[in-house]
Image (tube, rainbow, N blue to C red):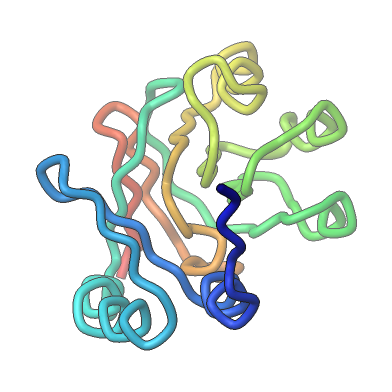
Length: 155
């Protein structure tokens, strides 16, 4: 017996959907429920937030100005002493590694490209910092504490 998916429900799920797991009880919220959950529980944590936690990929502590680089089109922005903020990296990003002093990545585990290359270059690197490319802005001063896995804006 094949069950078809309602196209309206599918569109709502694609528009806004939150899946969360609380003590093995998985909930799927769509549309209005998802929006309510986001605005009442998730967004409040993000407002005035200036510290984020991730996983350390290469230890060390460094401060510097942020450069958000989403693609090779943004490479021109990166200057000596910058902290690279990326979704992830690929081999074409390596040209930047002589200029940067730290890396913050949204994705990646300890064997990801960004993690391996940061260790090769000895650049403090924190990975798995959810949503960081949207939350940090170019030229904000940050502390990358890759010993503890914390990123913070220096106010």
